[in-house]
Amino acid sequence: MSRKFYYLRDDQVRKVVATWWARLHGIDNKSAAPQQANQRGARAELRRSKSLDAVLLTEGFRNLWQALLETGQCRERDMLAWACVAAALAEVRQQPMNESATFAQCLGAQKERTGRPYMSELRFAQLQKSRSGDDFLMRVRRALALINKTAPVLSLSDNIMHWFYEQRDNQNAPPTDRLAVRWATDYFTAVSAYEKQTHS
Image 1 (spheres, rainbow, N blue to C red):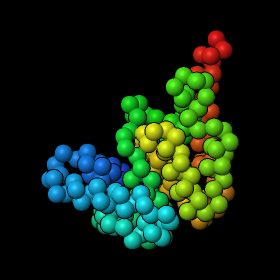
Image 2: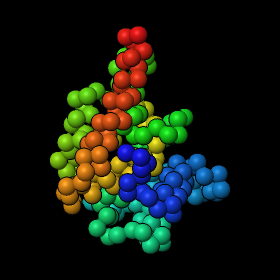
Image 3: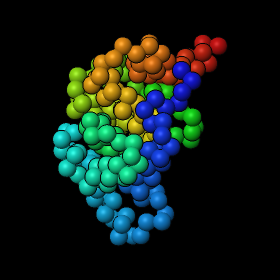
Image 4: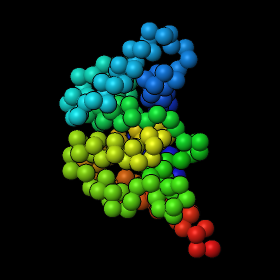
């Protein structure tokens, strides 16, 4: 699994997502104060949205969708997936210090040296078995709360797009290209890293 991104392969799309997230959280220093105030409102609106249909009606999603359309790399059938991305990224307050960390690695990382991962194996399995887009969003939000809302923006976005792609197209991809395998590999690699230290 050498490819870092499976569905955010386009440089323009990755830049749009990263810039949108930064502005939504007031990290973009070029934004004027009134713009930052509006972004706080947009962020709060996304967080209050209980369903993907509700997310579609928010200002924050419209801003992201419009910017994505301008790249020419966005398809209407991906709209719900991008709505999930917008709602999830509204929860992400900061990114990990380790720039190469993936979302699943963050979930499997050791919690305050207790010897346990931030997300238990049971909850991790439940996240992977989400039954619908709304259920998936709910579980992603819970996962983000467990890791103190610290997650790699592009990795998380790519994973969300991957999940929706598999749900929609249900294609028989090679095992190493499946999201469940990617997640399990990253999650249990993170867990084993400190389990070895504990038993050494």
